[in-house]
Image (cartoon, rainbow, N blue to C red; front, side, top):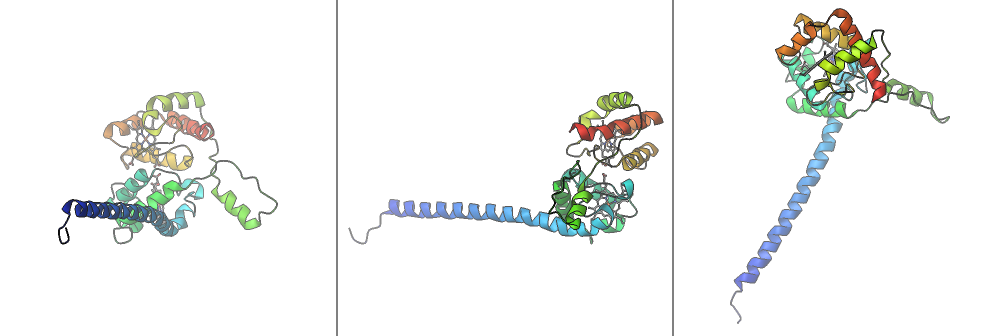
Length: 235
Ligand code: HEC
Ligand code: HEC
């Protein structure tokens, strides 16, 4: 009949339109969040320009461990340390001004941490092609992260590490989540941190674990460090 309205089919159409709209919006949201993610890494790279002066362009660290390697450390761990520097629960005089809310808001901490975590540093010397120019060669070499072996009793280091450190720092020293990677980090930096933990200048997780390091003899620490330098090859 003309003029009567078939409610059922109208509803049907409206529902389909709603559905299409909703799916369309969902698609758009997904696209935006993907683009947002890419942008964050891009922004992280920009922020890293400030850090590069000390930690190197690729987060490779420098001055033989005065500046630690940051590339490939877990994002969660990097974030926690940046916040600890800001709050001065971990004292870092050179970095303190860079971590203030005004300089490095939480969002920037997330971006720069994500960016640094995404950088992979090769652990083998590159094989150059004849066509690689001097700059390419230099850049490829700069990224290479080979930690030289240090002397120590490897058997004792391995036994101690595998018994006391492995649950948090991992079998091959890669760490996870809030537990930092130790393999591939400068030995002098790790040693300095262990000394800080022992002196109580930096908290090593819960109190009990600081105690763990306090129980080690000085030779034991050296042996563990020596063992850690062998882990890179086992990964
Ligand atoms: C003026 C030099 C300097 C600048 C610039 C700098 N840092 Fe550092 N950073 C250091 C030093 C020195 C240490 C080691 C401190 C120590 O021995 O405890 C360090 C340590 C760190 C650590 C701890 C690493 C670990 O394994 O626990 C993180 C994370 C870090 N810096 C991130 C950054 C980021 C991100 C930026 C840029 C926003 C930055 N730093 C800028 C000097 C600097
Ligand atoms: C229960 C977990 C746990 C165990 C076991 C543990 N650690 Fe850690 N370790 C941590 C955490 C968490 C941190 C980061 C602390 C912070 O936030 O400052 C850390 C940090 C470190 C650092 C500093 C790394 C850096 O990049 O600054 C060194 C060095 C270290 N541990 C050595 C050891 C050694 C050696 C052992 C074994 C004797 C050990 N840890 C056992 C949890 C652990």
